[in-house]
Length: 101
Image (cartoon, rainbow, N blue to C red; front, side):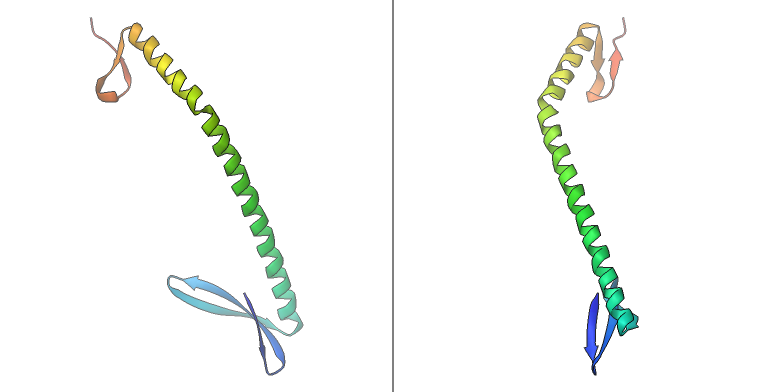
């Protein structure tokens, strides 16, 4: 987004990317340009706040996942031991199968 000043007037252009090329899209001039720029800045601030909240939530989930990793490993080990004791096996690390008699 850009407010451009030319010959004493204010113009608002929105930049958008199409592949490697950047296009400038005319939005308005004068008071409309200032209002559009303010609205665009507000939208960007909201998007940044949402992104920050999302990153914090992802970090919390990653911490919980790291805390549960040893418990999940223990559960996998106990499950494998119980299935092996019950006569099951894993062919080439695939799904558990009952051994044939």
